[in-house]
Length: 335
Image 1 (spheres, rainbow, N blue to C red):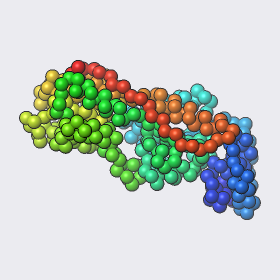
Image 2: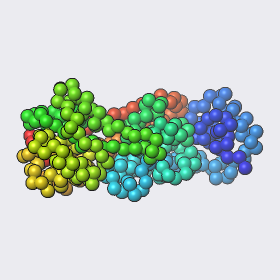
Image 3: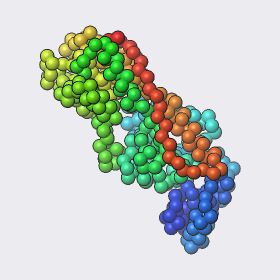
Image 4: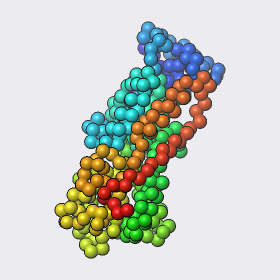
């Protein structure tokens, strides 16, 4: 029996477009030529609608949340947990049903949904594959504007600018960084940390960048501990006066390594982190950290998708929403 996916392939459109045309969804504007291709393909394939699809108009709209992490990885990452939680909460407030999928799950379920929110870092092939599932898709925490898809991302560069200004205000000139390294879930692409790129660019402009003071590893506490241990061995008496950490987990691990060597924070070394997760307030000393508004990012993503779904003459003009960040100063940095 022919499926919607078969028709989409033959008509060279997305499965979501086929579904809406066959169900006479008036909320979506589709050209006459496209409709004809879809109806002709359905006729060629002898497609028959099932009863459940015929009654879809009486049900709530369904949104798919596709995560680049596995479920276990998300449990260990407060940042993505918070993003996904805020998306689900706002979507439920607006009356949507949620289908939650991980990158390892079959994605056919997402094609049957009204819209998709893709959460996390995806490779270019993955972005294109996800984009074929629906005409209505928003990427969260992944800059996909270059590929022609709307996205919601934090303002990394201004966040880093604020951190360096805080160090400068305290008279600190030798600045190091523990940067994070990630790979897309399909292992196709190694992702350059945008915080590191901004850090290097800004300090190079000021003639203060020193590659010896930069260490790169995973975004984990263990990595932070090991990287700082290595820095203490390598640099000995030439330690930076301050370290910028790419996220709170790296910072927590680094603090432990410094404490084991009786190096005082912030008296000997100032530390400022990024994300401002719940970890920041529950370590000693409390972490100064750049606050990323994960709640607002999730809300904006759902609102952007809702605007697309509600439009009677939707035109896919990609948008990039950049959410502002702010530095929360606590005990780990000099004022």
